[in-house]
Structure formats: C-alpha cells, structure tokens
Length: 386
Ligand SMILES: Cc1cc2nc3c(=O)[nH]c(=O)nc-3n(C[C@H](O)[C@H](O)[C@H](O)COP(=O)(O)OP(=O)(O)OC[C@H]3O[C@@H](n4cnc5c(N)ncnc54)[C@H](O)[C@@H]3O)c2cc1C
Image (cartoon, rainbow, N blue to C red; front, side, top):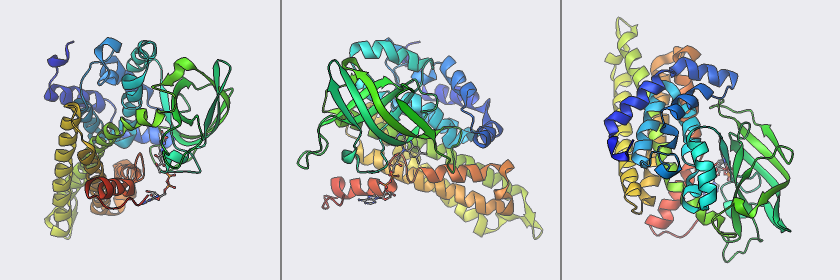
C-alpha cells in the first residue's frame, strides 16, 4: 500500500486493535514467566507494522517517526507498557544505522527479514567498565587477513537470547583524547554463539525482554559486515539517538496513561468514608496534574517527531520529549500506586508493573542526567561537565 494511504487515526485504530488482543494479562504473564512475546511480534509483523519506518524498497512501509510514535503510544496504553513497546521498538530503531549507512547488499539482505520478523537483531554498545562514557569502550576488532576478529565484553544487551545478528560497536584503533569518538567501527554480524557467551541478567522489570552480558571471544566478521566506514562507527550510531529518544517518549506517555486510566477508574469506584475517594482533592488533583504533564510531554514528542520527519535538527525537542515523558509517566504510575492504596501492590491491578517499567526509562536508553548534560552544554552553552 502506498505511504499516503495511511493517516494517523487509521494507524492509531489499527495498532490499538492489534495491541488490545494482548493487554494486561498477557503482559503480566510474559513478565512473570520471562517469556518473549512472540505472538505479539507475529501480529505486528503480519500487519506490516514492524517495517513502519523502513523504506518500501526494503520491505517496509516507509512512514515516519510520527507514525511509529503513535503505534508505540497505543502499545503502551493498551497495557503493553514498556515491555510491549520494547518488543516492537527493537525491530524499528536498531536497524536505523543499517538503513542510513549500510551497504546496498546489507540492506537488501537483512532489512526485509527484519521487517517481516523473520530474523531478530540486538544492539551492543554498553560495556561494564565505561557506562555512559561510550568513547571508552574496549571491545576491539582487529583485521586478520580478510576477517575481523572481535574480542571484548558487553552488558545489558537486550534481545541477545534470541537475536540472529548483532549491531556491535567496537574500537578498531585506540582512543585518542583529541578525537575520542574516532576509531570506533560498527559491525552488523552474526551473533555466533560458539564465540559469544550470552548470560541473562535477572532484573526488576520488563522481564519478557531479556537483558544480557556478552563475553565475546574471537568473534569473526567480514568487511561486508561493517556499517558505514571503518573508524566512523559512532557517527553512524548517533543518527539513531534522537529517534530512539522520541520513540521512548511516545511509549512512556502511553504507559503513563495506562496507569492514569486505572487510577481514575479506581478513584471513581472505591468508596471509603462513605464517598468515592476521587471526591478528595488529595486524590483528584495529582491525577489531574499527571494528565496535564502527560499531554504536555505528548505535544513535545509530536513536535520532535515532526521535525525529525521533516529532516530538521531536533536534538532539543527529542531530549526534552524523552525527559518530560519519563518524568510524567513515572509520576503518573507512582500516583496510580498511591490512589490504589494497598491494592496497588496486588499484581492483578497491573499498576505496579507500569511503575517498575516507567522507572527504567530514567536510566536507559539514556539517563535523565545525560539529557540534562546535553541541554546544559548544547542549548545553554554552559561548560561541558562530562
Ligand atoms: C533494561 C536495560 C536494557 C538495556 N538495553 C541495552 C541494549 O540493548 N544495548 C545497549 O548497548 N545498552 C543497553 N542498556 C544499557 C543502558 O543504555 C545503560 O545502562 C545506560 O546507558 C547507563 O549506563 P550505566 O548503567 O553503566 O551507568 P553509569 O555510566 O555507570 O552511570 C551511573 C549513573 O551516573 C550518572 N552519571 C554518570 N556520569 C555522569 C555525568 N557526567 N553527569 C551526570 N550524571 C552522570 C548516570 O546518568 C547514571 O545515572 C540497557 C540497560 C537496561 C537497564
């Protein structure tokens, strides 16, 4: 179908109808049993949505971040929260560097398979010893004959239990203090389990999407697996940071609304001291305040997506949207916990899951502190602090 056959209302309705086939119980069960949501991914793949932002010539629909954002919002609000949003998102954003910097052969070979859900990828940047200071990664790729031999360690790599391929950031020359982001190379290569040990990390939330430590020993890659130019891998990666922040913002707003919706319903129905608890302003006002904050964050997310889709610089708006959405969503989930009182601790009401999941986004994929660092330095022109 041609891209112009889509409009946002149609996308919202279609995505929500699909997401509603799953809902709270499905996600709670997936979380509890750490089960990857294959049925959910299949439903979105079969309807073409996994390829929402991929170009049409590579099996996608060729739409923008605005449309992807609407889908993520609906997944979040349907009860999928960050679990559902992550499952979807890892098909949509990690391929960005391949779309923009991959060779024609790489795009033809892999993008259609990602868009159809035939293969899964993961995204390997973070390392145990350097955290948010990415230029200090140590995973090294060395050219030996016609092969690259990669050794190192990664941590927190989502999807690695099932991924077929990995987008892997390595160093190919030692760090130079003058140009710390040069000398890194991005590979999109097989996640060969005879060379990479993948250990699952037990964690607080979003347990249906695995997070892993990777021990990489003599992993082989070919020249054809290099994304963009050797030594310029970080530049390829950085293009994907704004879209990821915008995507996360939409998903958070959806999840925050899921929590708020539950709280509002409960506040109308729960009677204590002979009246609905929602009659108390101590209950009603925080919920009204959360409604306003979520709506404001949404406007910023739409503005960021609009600018990105128009090819305009959008660093300020993307960072602001991610920051505002994360604060608003976590606060909405926390207030929902308070509104439900003791029952908020019962798994059957699901707000504890929204609360756990929205908290994650203060830390990853980019921490709130690093967003503030960006705004301090790049927008306010304050001295660099990191
Ligand atoms: C569930 C989950 C999934 C993830 N998935 C992936 C994935 O698929 N692929 C991948 O590559 N990574 C992934 N990550 C990693 C994630 O992006 C990092 O955890 C995140 O970047 C933070 O790194 P760190 O934990 O090492 O924090 P650290 O760098 O150790 O920082 C600790 C704290 O100090 C703050 N801090 C550090 N320096 C400064 C400074 N100069 N100014 C202000 N504050 C500072 C940070 O903001 C943070 O709050 C995931 C993480 C989690 C938790």
